[in-house]
Amino acid sequence: MLDTQIQNEIQAMKQWCMDNYDNGADTMVECWGDSNYADLFTFEGVPHTKEEAWDLLTRIAAVYKDRQADAENSAF
Image (cartoon, rainbow, N blue to C red; front, side, top):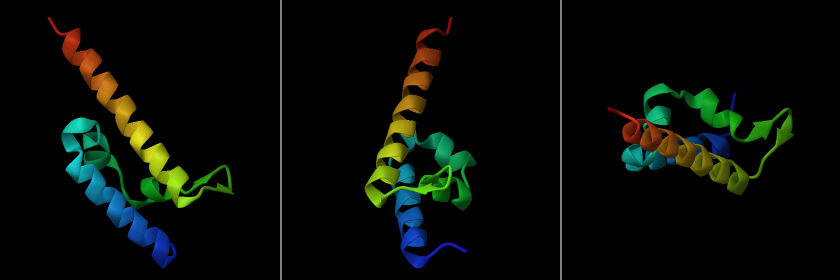
């Protein structure tokens, strides 16, 4: 079970993703569950700070946004 602080951060991240749905976060909104967000707080057993987790979330959204733009620009 996740501790309360991480649960609160996950809820804030989910809201951020809703607010940034058209900026690359749509995949997270549509496909991610709480465990995916929780994974941002650890990597290979090494804990990440709250700031590192948020940085990772925003970088993932930026990659999704770039991929969407590439797909739109390569459409016939």
